[in-house]
Image (cartoon, rainbow, N blue to C red; front, side, top):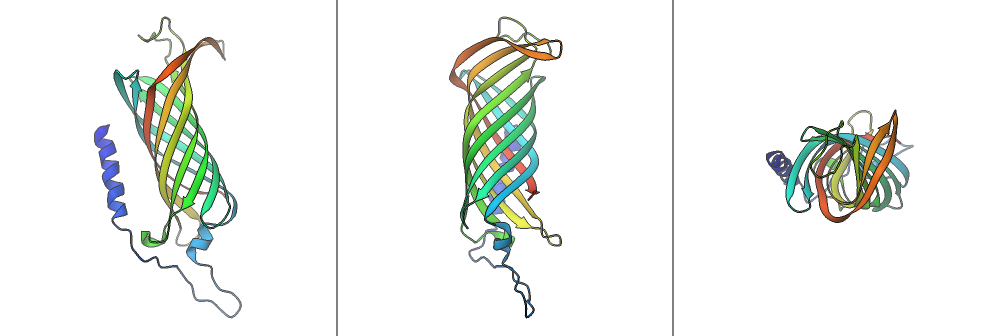
Length: 233
């Protein structure tokens, strides 16, 4: 897992090395009636927009400061943003992740709100770089399939962990060559604090919470996401 994260880090440092000091706006020959907008003005457009994408993630669970568990898997990302001006946007986002830890299936969800800031021009190949900060809540559901875990007094069909979270992201947006659709790539780092846990049993097809307890917040989950996607509208 650590080797995989190291490879990701090297890739992004390599990409950053291609950054140029001068940003060339794309202009197209115009006729007597119209002039094509610069590329940046086609991507960073004021108003409401929805972006969606998929990717991969790798993370580490720190349980009570004593044990570590590593996980990798797939992720699905959605951003609903309102672009106020040519630099700032407000966003409501969701990230759904799927992973396995010690043969246990995990379904995690992050629901966040935050801001997006367009970084100054200078990114290679007419990309529009941006930075995001977001915070919100996390829900991680562990499917035990009836296994009794050492940390719990009885076997549950599911165990749910909840708590606050925060994250940072850096990415780039650009247009496709022919269709002029906007697509993006993004690397993000999130920290989740697990402050509540619930034991869940299935009553036929209905999940029922049979126990609930508060945690001291010393269990955390740190995750790196790499996602790719495009603008829906």
